[in-house]
Amino acid sequence: ETGVTQTPRHLVMGMTNKKSLKCEQHLGHNAMYWYKQSAKKPLELMFVYSLEERVENNSVPSRFSPECPNSSHLFLHLHTLQPEDSALYLCASSPGLGGDYEQYFGPGTRLTVT
Amino acid sequence: QKEVEQNSGPLSVPEGAIASLNCTYSDRGSQSFFWYRQYSGKSPELIMFIYSNGDKEDGRFTAQLNKASQYVSLLIRDSQPSDSATYLCAVNTGGGADGLTFGKGTHLIIQP
Image (cartoon, rainbow over all chains, first blue to last red; front, side, top):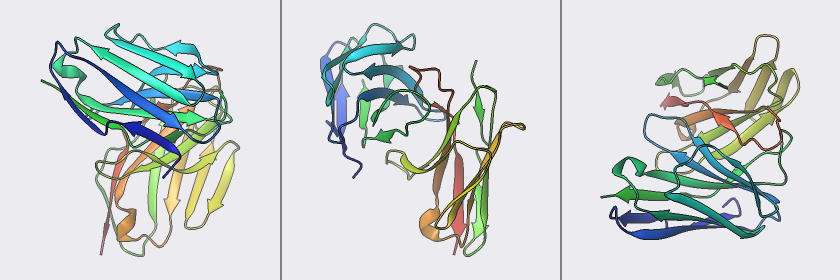
């Protein structure tokens, strides 16, 4: 266990549904991240939060909406997704931003869009 | 465009031998380098990180960094079947808000 938890672990949703992914870190870290991992592709950074403020949005479609109510919790709200959005969604945290800090990953949510 | 390149493998190594995993990166300003291990169906697990040129050893693992050649490697000594996994190289350019740029990973198989 890395101290980063994610729920749900598996999610199947239709294209018209709305769902949310939750991430919680118990490490006292200040930065949190959402990544997407698709088959045959490298991990793709989606969003970066530092002390509850979004500092990076890597051209992610608006059907993905992040929320960070405090430094321990991170959500990813999903609506009107496409089948190509099916992937493993990973949350990570680090003590701070920048190159000196390692990131620790949660177990991920396996998302299937039907 | 920041890129991190790895040979996807599979790389097959006999048990007890040294496994050598390689990674190159395009951004000369990169400052820190990470190796993650990912078992099938699981999330990436941090193995080592390195910031300075040279070698860094932790148990059976050694990370090697050559910034002039933009090259980082991971050596696994006395390879065990439990080391069979995909190894991800990740690079942080230290530009403040960036997360990590990952390679596609090398699939390592340790043959008993």
